[in-house]
Each structure stands twice: as C-alpha cells, then as structure tokens.
Image 1 (cartoon, helix red, strand yellow):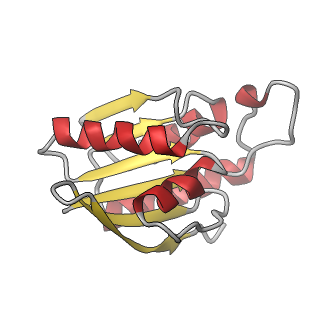
Image 2 (cartoon, helix red, strand yellow):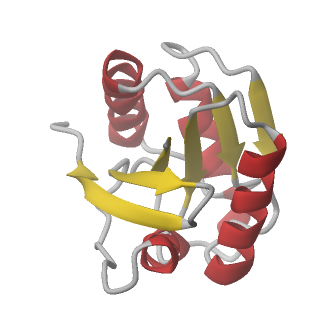
Amino acid sequence: MKTILIMRHGEAGPMQANDAARLLTNRGQLQALEMGLWVSQSYQPSALLVSPYSRAQQTADAVKQSNQFTFEETCADIIPSGSASFAVDYLETLISMNEAISTWLIVAHMPIVSYMVDQFVPGEMPIFPTAGIAVIEYCPKTHKAQYKGLHAPKV
C-alpha cells in the first residue's frame, strides 16, 4: 500500500490578473508550516509533487522545513484548471516507477485537488480548506484506493 497526501496550498492573497503569481498571506504561511509539521509527525512523505504556481511553491517550501524528500518535482499539470484524470494517471506512473517510495505529497489547488480525490475514490470529492490535506491509501497492483479523511490546520 501507498499513502497519497493531497494538499491544497495555504491561504493566498486576493485574486489578481496573474493568478499564478498570487502569494500566501501570513496566515497561509502559518497554515503551511502547521500542516508540514503534522505531515512529518504522521506520515513522513518522501516524494513531493507540486504545482508551479507561487502559492503552491511557497506552501511546499514551508512543508519542506519539517520534511525531507528524496523525490521532488514541479508538475505543470496540477494547476487549478488542470485535468485530474491526467494528473492521477501521471502520479500512478510515478508511483510505479518509484516502488521504494511509500508516501507521496501533492501540493496543488482547488478544484483539482477535489477532483483528484474523486479520481482515486469515486464519489469522494471533499471541499478542501486552505492547507487541508486529504489522505488516501492506494494499492498500485489493483489501482484501488480508500479515502481516509481530510485534515485541516487549526490556524
């Protein structure tokens, strides 16, 4: 079994013309730090897949303060308007190519994070709070997954 942690970025500043450039607020930074600590104490992921958008990169940087990753990749397919089906196919391919990695963390955006959960576990489509993390147990041999819950920061 593999554990897949799907995380929404921390709270970001208001909408602007260049959505990809939006940055985390101070609260968003604190949320990301809090959830990074929670992840390190609960799961210790060793692989990180992150959106290229600034707020997701900042969230990943905060999470990295309490976690060490042996595999890291910025993935242009996990942006807000990205295809969840394509993203999950790509993640499944990475998992099959990196059998030694047991826990994966994906840092992305609404709505793709909700759609990714639904791709793994049809009928489960949680609404993520900022910096929220969905936990999925996944069997690469059968491609079956179980949704274990959604965890949110207290900040």
